[in-house]
Image (tube, rainbow, N blue to C red; front, top):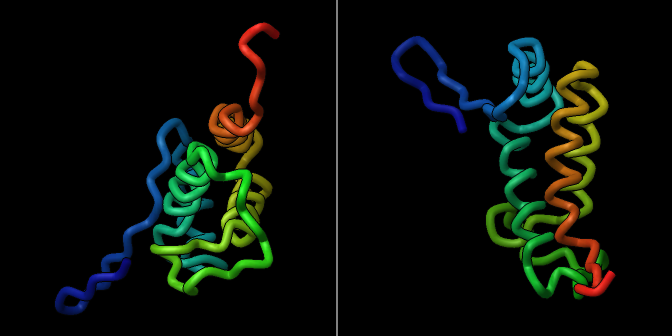
Length: 115
């Protein structure tokens, strides 16, 4: 999201908790060059919503949806964005973000209650 006020341009970047200042700078650079402003945080939110949805196993990657990111985000693109971010962050921040994503992905792996 970009807001122009007078002579300055204010761009909202994703502010992920637990990241170092250098990690936040890397995300800001990614969102200003390869991605859209705020897209990293949106991708994480879309992925978490998708994984926690009970019908997530019904996802068909051939279905492109309506084409509006806010309504029907393409999950392959969301995964690609998360992959780009994890690969470009500094090692410590990458491990922290990957741990957060692994915690989200635990909802995907169903385990029987007796296991």
